[in-house]
Amino acid sequence: MEPITHFLTGACIGRAGLNRKTAYATLAAVLAAEAADLDIVWGFAGPVEALKHHRGITHTFIAVPFVAAAAVGATWLYHRWVEHRRARRAKTAPPLEPGAPTRSRPQPVRWQWVYLAAFISALSHIALDWTNNYGVRPFFPFNPRWYAGSFVFIAEPVLWVLLFAALIIPGLLGLAEREISSRRTPFRGRGWAIFALSGMFLLWCLRYAEHAAAEGLILNNPITTVPVDRVAAEPYPWNPFRWHVIVETQNFYQFGEVNTRTGNIDSDPQTDQLFKPPVTPAVEAAKQTELGKVYLDWGRWAVVRDVGQVQVIGIDPPQLPPGRTWTTVEFSDLRFGYDFRGTGNSRPPSGLGGAVYIVDNREEAGQEMGGRGQK
Image (cartoon, rainbow, N blue to C red; front, top):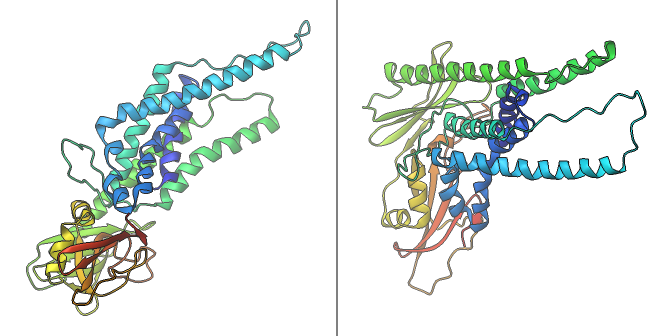
């Protein structure tokens, strides 16, 4: 999922009760909820290295204890800074007058509870990323296989509404309470946080069931007359009943739109079809490049096409002497080859694609992804 959902989930995990056990539970939970995405630093090494390492070791079960420990370490540094400031203020503060109320003491820090909050949030990051169609490798390096639930879009506004409401409404209620009463309720928002996390789980259950229903509709009502090798259903945001479906046959891919609430299937054999491209020598050479190996390891619905002498954004075409030729090989993944806004269908190449220049059908002369060349 995108960072907003991770951060908000961590905040709700901390406020669901762990913040009553110790100070900094919510802070540690928020940090741990997003810490795994620090693997974006691989992007400085180039887009191919970014794809190779994104959702890699930091998104595994073996890394969860260390991710949680790092979040607790950052929280401890913040705690030391707060204590240092508090000590400085105490030295310069005037003495209390007789009969004046004593200053309130800060909530004690119980580091085992802080670590538990961080640990649960680190696990939540893997769970959230598994729900979308990009996938995770939770058992890496022992098992490099990608797992993807593919039933929640990578940015789900329904989750934003749930999580934001859980964090904002208690604050608004607190303002109203202070207007009519001098009392202040500590640890406000526990019920709302539990409500939001429960709502997230129920949304997952609904979407998981509708995802299975979408695939079942296609299998029971084929959109092509030839034998089907496999089927996939890709999610849309907001609407849990609408799915973009991909059907693979021996020679082509068929696309369609499914509404699981009405049972309607929309697929045009003429416009919603992509024939499998031929496997040329340049395609075979491109598959052996670093981009090819990384992309095909990740791209469960990858399409590799020799598109001829087409210049791509991010890298200049090779300058060759007479007698030598070059061609461009494009990589795309059908999981991301549709318009998620619901305004129409797009076809690959689309998001998360790449390209390789191949010289004389055997030599690599440049790689790019997302308009960035790999050095």
